[in-house]
Amino acid sequence: MNKKILILLAASIFVTGCATTYQANEVEPAGFLGNSYQVLKDGGDDQSLLLYRHPDVNNLCKNYNKVLLEPITIWVKDESSVADVSVEDRQYLQSYLYQAVNKALGSDYQLVNQAGAGVMRIRGAITEAEGSSVVLDTLTSIHPGTVLLSRIKQLAFGSGSFVAETAIEFSIEDSITRTTLMMGVDKRAGGKNWKKKFNSWGKVEASYDYWAEKLKTRLSECRAGSLEM
Image 1 (cartoon, rainbow, N blue to C red):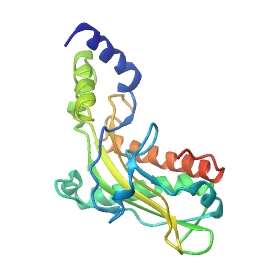
Image 2: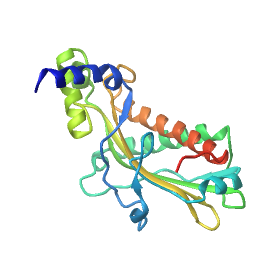
Image 3: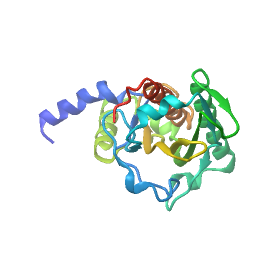
């Protein structure tokens, strides 16, 4: 590896390597969205890795002031990391993501438990979940050389060394007509900074917090008619 590449990699550590979480390079659909994957496109900057938005979504969003948030499910595909997660931890992760989304949207929407006029239905599934190796993640976050190697691995394979990873699939639709407003698939991994470092699920929690706040922002943009297509 030449000197220029090493310099760029070293610089990138300070730009992105210290993030609490970051988006993975790619994600494998798990089947939660059924027969809808053919309409998904590669997402752009600051979007889900795979994404669909209704062509008239900016106008449709103005029709909703209530949200029906369904319980988060676990969707296990072949060789999914979530297959190895205990029942107790699965329930914890489901609850954490649900509460994060519920809290994020509660200030903008009335949260309801049944379909009706002006109600958008949100479904979500955790399709991958792997906690970090706390000891090894910590050790490889101390020395600049191991941080650099982790960053190289991140650039090449989408995640660093001994970090947490998680993926989700989601769908937002009209609760009565089932017209799909948005849906997507995304995956994030833990960065090498020290936030939530000493909890194996800490960076997974941070990913769920990120997605919940991003959903709040996107729906706010959509209601304002300014969501980028």
